[in-house]
Length: 320
Image 1 (cartoon, helix red, strand yellow):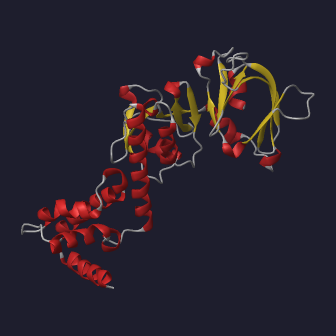
Image 2 (cartoon, rainbow, N blue to C red; image 1 turned 120 degrees about the vertical axis):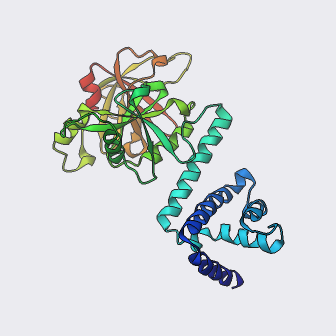
Image 3 (cartoon, rainbow, N blue to C red; image 1 turned 90 degrees about the vertical axis):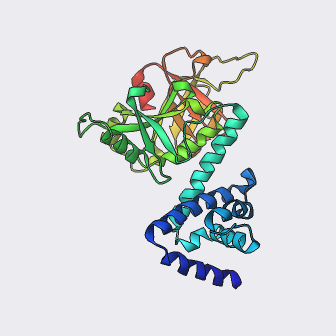
């Protein structure tokens, strides 16, 4: 087709450019390509971008239809012209998704995002204090263990090799925290903060986690689907019904066959509530507004519900 022939000629011309010119053109077209990918939000498709930038890229006035057509072609065919691989394309799409979702949340909730367009995040070491902050660029492929290693390497302190440093996702103004599995992708978790009432209250912190050592040293069950754990815990679903309020009630809680089951008591055979474990996230801690009867507990999040459990001591909390 005519477009394929034009793209082939563009490629030949681009390859003939001096290295610094080619790199500059690459950076500019990548930026414009990403802008036009969000044209449904910013109203700037490649045609409008070409009209704006053609005068900058040509030594003539740059406003003729032919010149604007060339710039439009360069923007639209950026991936082909610069042999951008699939992983890089996916990274741009993920970063665009992140930026637009946070901006949408900011517009509706009036919150401020701390992430800049190049996805540089504040990551804290041990506690959320200015002097403990590291600025780290998150790529879509960065996993929890890599983030922890990067943050530790940026500090001049020395750390023991056998210390198990873990990345924690902290939400609800520090009331809830979740130790991330070492293989979890950080950016995927951060993207979900846009669903929070106040995304800017969430942050990442790297710290030692005693529970990680216990889990690492323990023997894994042959079949995790048959894992069984049970105990009486105080439970609340956080509802504000007139009769129950936020009152915590005793429930017999069973973890079995990849499900979390709630019974009225140990004698009952039919669960009052159940949920598939693969559908949940479990956070250490409880919201203070629920007025929990003890200091230890954990919160189970699903897309639609939040379950709150009180524990009698710290060891029970970590065990669950």
